[in-house]
Length: 169
Image 1: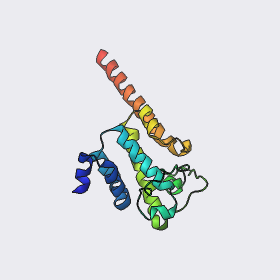
Image 2 (image 1 turned 90 degrees about the vertical axis):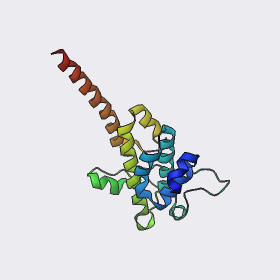
Image 3 (image 1 turned 30 degrees about the horizontal axis):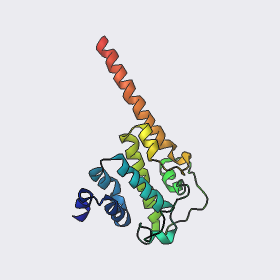
């Protein structure tokens, strides 16, 4: 019940951290239910990005940094795309310095990250989508999601144009 109430009382950040730590597979569904603002989606993308790129020892604990410490600036997220890309047959883009998590936790985070990006690429326009992506990311990892976002806009435009032409016949 706390996770359902938290966003309504201004505790979305805390609720998202709990979901990421304890129920990462449910994150996208939870966010679709609770999140209404682009800034909240940006927070989700940032939290996942930081979690994916954190050292393995940091992922064994809470997603929150110790009190008083600055937020970490993660390296390129494209690391670990090997397994995610293998599922789609795409070539993985790996970055240096990535630390593998124990027991598939990192893979679970990568899968959810891709799920969130896939949802956003279909939910927001290309400009908004690009603003949600981390500045230090590898464009090769994000390119399929960017293409999906752009193609949705062009598809919608083409359908509207075809309907307009059909109405003139």
